[in-house]
Image (spheres, rainbow, N blue to C red):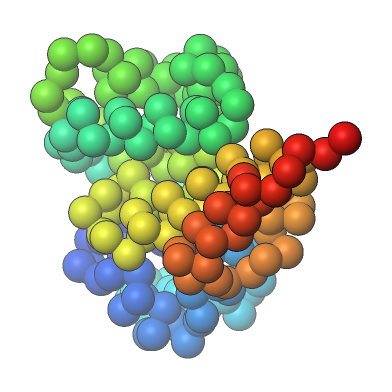
Length: 198
């Protein structure tokens, strides 16, 4: 997934353009991007053709160069804190998770979450690892100016919160499939307005 994201950006493609070229639907791609389901060899071939690389290039993380990017600390730190809250976790939980995978990633996340920074230079792998931990699309942090991704993800997070408050599981959330952000928010509101269970 990291290679797909890096190569897509290197080619200047949006997620929609990549999906169109690869002949994939958004829900199909997101289920694989979120690591819910694995890619098969046909998927790898379609993505490789769409990106103009070989399937081996996609499957070998060592072939993809690390990409550093300067990001606004405030807005992204706010999103990371929102993911932490949605996981009913703490910043220390996230940092410990990242530290287990890659101590440099944990250091990057610490820099992002540090108070007072206006911008920070991060390896985009840090953002990818955080979104995978938070079970949201990578673009929520890497393409933070994409209003559609932001709206959809914020609505999903709101619904997750409401479902957790109502005692539902994340498995039930996934069963909802593709719904508009407005529909997700309406369900969340409906759950919150129910009388408490006795």
